[in-house]
Image 1 (cartoon, rainbow, N blue to C red):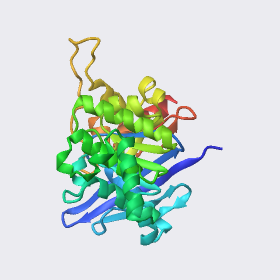
Image 2: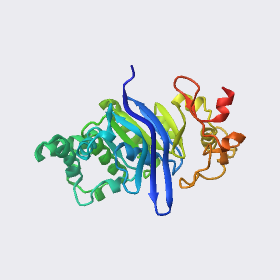
Image 3: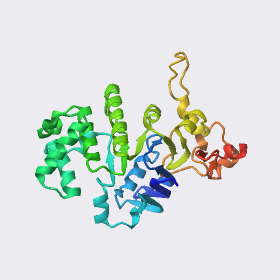
Image 4: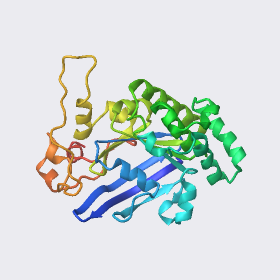
Length: 323
């Protein structure tokens, strides 16, 4: 039997605003096996971050409302947890790394005190022991422990992201959520941070949810991939399924948009049009206005899951007909 760290079923989240109803997540299904890394891939506005905040129960309400679905973390139903129980789980059972480390750090506290605060809050230890553990965590992420007495502005972007990783992993959570963790970093530092995250995930036997729009990062760190469009998973599979047996037209479009380093004269083929407005989603398949293979029924019928193998499914009427 597979053991799942994260189970999301039929999650739907909407924002009720003065300008109308914004449907951010629309029936999302995710299964993340213990010790594995799942990549959530999609354009800006696809609902990736809303899904991540739902796991932490940090959707601001109002205006955010969870309309349907369930989320289980380590077998525990998070919607059945009290506010106090969720506060204990954040940082201990599940942690999140955000894309801009500066917004995650308090500019008037030393980095050592900020990491120590995690230990004091979740493990109830004294400040002296917490300070020692904070120095050990800094060493673990490649920063000299004595720099714990310094402030965030004294660190480079890459170093600040390492501090945030140290904070996130301080209590060895079951699940680490990384929301575009390398977006604010240059390419060389990106590679170092990704390698560090992979090593620490293996060391602590954690599961990781990697939120990104970069297929290169997915290929580097993920075991499985969920391609998100308009708040729904449109293709799901192992890394090999998605990269070598791509079936959904949207996923194919993402790959066609990448430069070909083997053929530098080839032109990029971007997906035409724009991501639909979540406040005004098209009827039927949300991708049909941009799809070169759309069928007449795509304008009215919402595609269900079509399983292509034990590990690979798509939501596409064309694939259903071919099957």
